[in-house]
Each structure stands twice: as structure tokens, then as C-alpha cells.
Length: 430
Image 1 (tube, rainbow, N blue to C red):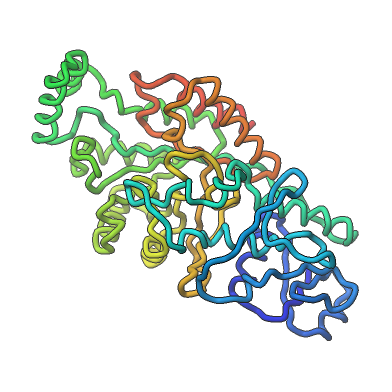
Image 2: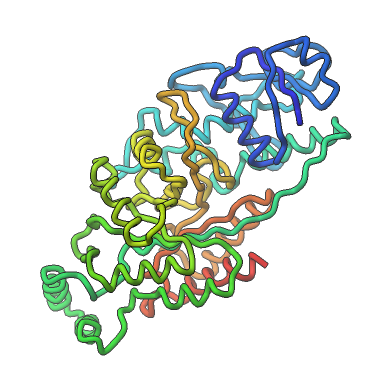
């Protein structure tokens, strides 16, 4: 245990120190405001503030963690050995940057509360983020900073034992459109036929007819292959289904069909099933609650994980709603069109409500990559990108999480997605 002296005990300090010390490094900490208690403590100890108390290990505060509210913050990103950081501090500090304030800025998604331009789908664009602008988006910088802290702690406290955590693989499959042709309902099926005819897609028209008549399997129904693959793996996997209305009319299905619900139950027998909250649900709590109850009635257990349709995160409202519904984990923390660590970490973290200045029990899983951001790349480039990101996570023994679609494994999709899915579940996990 490490005793930490602070001048002021704030929710921000508690939040970020426990993420770095406890969640990443696995070290228990306690805080004290008492100088007498701090001086008399014989075990490992350090102080955090504007000035050191004496000759103890001291980390200088930038000031962000002692503040309240949201206001524009001046940020200058500087090189730091093999990484980058911001909120530089004085020479008396054991580290040249206030990694705690910098980590809080990224974890709380502080920048997403500030005025910004949204993209066409009302999302926070990657181009607005500090990570993209300063080119550190492809590194889990918070975990890297934490490991630098770890080195200093070990060199100064011989009695302190810090065990390395294990690398975790937790991939996601989004079954946004589980069937290409089946269970679309009368109007969507007719619209599909008309669209195929108008675009002279006669092969697709034939495939649609064979599938509807039961002659051929639906190409998007790839759950048999997914199940057979995960049977051989010890890695974690969550498969998400959409029950509400799809943003695009043609992608929607009748979620009341028994066959569709049956497949959700089958998948739930082999791995965790999560829920894709529809666009309508994200803006109306009653629909959000209804969709959660529908999924729980299908799987006959409490829904633990969710992800938002179109990867939309409307901070802080949607996360407050998830807390109200007692959802344990949200998996939307990824950019639709850009690879990298949106929150700067590869370690699951808790949602901190900046408006209310409170820590919540909602766990945010930071995903490193979605196949949607790679569809315009060739095979060699895809392999290089995925390998680079995987190695970044492996170096800090974090959680590697990649988002696939069930459509990635269909006969009409590129085989590279099947290869990557199997590789990320098998080869890298071994």
C-alpha cells in the first residue's frame, strides 16, 4: 500500500489515481490530508500538490484535478522519451509531466464537453481530438505513463511489489443486420426486390429469392461460424444485437420473429450477448428502457453490456441513462472511421460525470479498432495497422478489443476479416 498526501481531497483525484495505481498497476493506495500521519508512515509514500512537504517523492500538480466545472484548458503536447505528454511541471517533480491531470483529461473525455463541430451522424469526430491532432492516437498513452510511474516506484521503494497484469483479448461482434434477406417484413422485402431490379443486380436478386424460399442460407447469418470459432478460444467475446429500428430502413428486420430471437438465445448459450441501443433509444429514455427489457426477456438474464448504434456517444446524457438502467459496461468508446485509443487507454475505466463531478459505476471499455475504419485499406496495410495496435497493447499488458460485424464473415465479404477474427481469438491469445 502507498500513502499519498494531498492538500485537497477531490473526486477527480480519487478517480484518476485509482485508475492508474489500482486498475493499471494493481497497487493499493490511501490518501491523507494529515502531515503528521504522512511523516509517521513507515511504508511507501508520496505527495501530490503544488510544493513538496520535504524530501519525499513528490509529484507536482497542474491544477486541473483541484478544479470543478468545465472550461477551456491550454494544452501543449511535448515529446517524452518514446511517447508524448502534456501538462508539464517543474524540476522538483518526480516526473516531468502531471500524468494524473493529463490522464483525467483523456479519461473524462473533457474535450468532448467543450464546443466542437459534429460529423454528419452527430458524432464527435476524431479530427477534433487531441490524440489525432498531436498524433498519439495509436498509443495507449495513459498506460505508458503509468508504466513510467511504475519504474520510479520500484526504484525508490524496495519493499513495494508490483506484479505484471496479463494481456486480455476481448473482441466484439456487432450483429446490426443479422440477416440480409430473411425476416425483413413485407415492405422491406418488396423494397429490396425493387432496388435490386432498378440497379440491375440480378445475381443479388437470385440470391434473395433462394434465401427467402429457404433454398440457400442467409449470407449474413454467420453465427454458426462464430460459435464454432469461439469454442476453440479462451478469449472473451461479446455479440451485440439490435432490437430497435435501424437508422437505414432497408437494414431493419422484424425483431419479434421467433427465429431471430432463437438465434440470440443460441449465441447467448456460448458467449455474452449485448444490446445495440437504437438511435431512437439514445434520445428517449423510455425507448432505451424498453429495448433493455426486451433483450433481458429473450436471454433470460440481466443485460450487462451495451453499445450505441452508429458509435454515437452523446456525453453525458447517454451514460447517465445507462447508469440509471444499471448497465454494467458500455462498449461505444471507439471512432467509426479512425483507429486508435479514443480515451488514451487500453484499460477499462469508470465513467466520470464532469457536470456533476461524480464517479459512476459504469465501466467504459475502450476499443482500439473497428473494421469499419479499415474497409478502404488493402490487406497488407490492414495487417500492419492491426499488428501495430496489438503490440502497443501487449507492451502494457492491457485489453485488446477489436470490433467486427457479423457481415464481415459472410461469403460476399473479404476473407481477411475471418482470418483476423480467428487470429485475434487464437494466435494472439495463446
